[in-house]
Length: 111
Length: 142
Image (cartoon, rainbow over all chains, first blue to last red; front, top):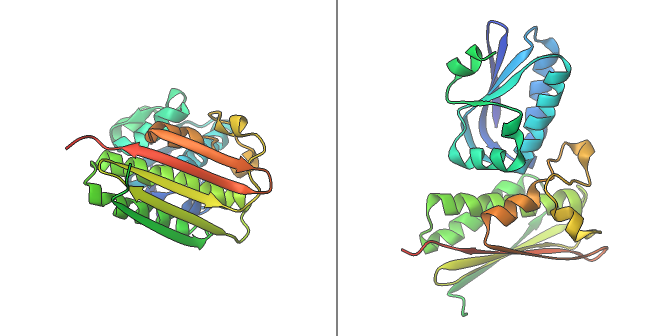
């Protein structure tokens, strides 16, 4: 499990690598929250292109970050989800509040 | 229905064993030549069941989780059980988005995921007596 950060203008891109389950949830949460604290960017794109597995623990992590970002008046969106991940997001209703984009470029320009 | 193969595993309630359990279940079920999507359904459901044992059954303490899998001609039954605290209200636990541990940022979607990805799910639990989840999955005919 790894989380890598990059930024484009006022948008932070959070690329998640590997499997998102309860075991890796804590790590992702700490990494992202830590970066948000020091970052000057307020909008976030979660890049799922390298997520190989996700269960409902992943929904909790993304939902939690979404709430934090919203409190700071930022926007949070998701990009590059595979079909397994998408089914879980759909089930949770998260996609009704968080838009999903096919690539980083469209996600960034939606901000 | 006679099983054509069977396996049993027992492991500690450590979160690092979530990946072990779902990969082991998927590897065993692979004998039936399921589709990639069916395998993902199995992995995700096992992950949910094992995570529940760790967080809710043993409340992050130590205990053993048992997993068994029976293979039939074109289906599989996976059982995951703990001897932890049990579920107070099973109907409530099944509700989408309900979680007894919102402070842990749990989504409350565990049972909903299992019910959606498997064909049948049975929850056997009593407070103080642990929980057993039986999940049944039929595979598309070859």
